[in-house]
Image 1 (cartoon, rainbow, N blue to C red):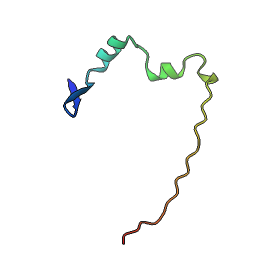
Image 2: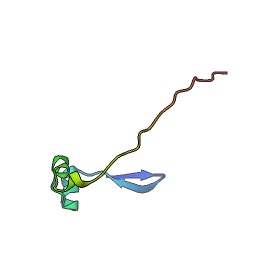
Image 3: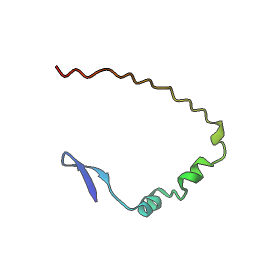
Length: 58
């Protein structure tokens, strides 16, 4: 099944099994997170501060 964006093919909907077969990926997310060396990857996302302000309904 094709999904279009403004009439042009943009995405393809397929079963997960078909996706795995096409990409030859057989591991799940738990396997990917447990792969050797993952602990050596540094990832420190910046903290985000979201300030609120009153709504102006005038």
